[in-house]
Image 1: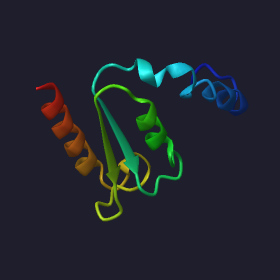
Image 2 (image 1 turned 90 degrees about the vertical axis):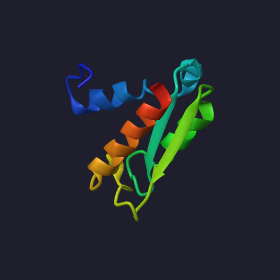
Image 3 (image 1 turned 120 degrees about the vertical axis):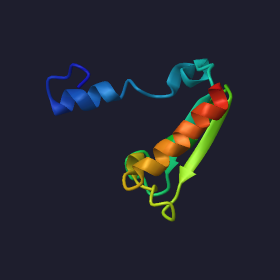
Length: 93
């Protein structure tokens, strides 16, 4: 992954992917940002991205009630894909 020769090198390379330098502010297309209420991997990161985006943006927090609260909405993929598809249709139709 990312051309890394070892897990340690991969972790180092992942540090290059961040919000510094105004990278998120350069995004100009409508953007859908998804979060899972109990996501342990990206906790708080979607919210930080939303703060930096200057484009048209939509934030969706998937909940435990929807069974979509885990990382990448595991447990409710069809629900999440339907929500994403609806947003795409409404935004780009």
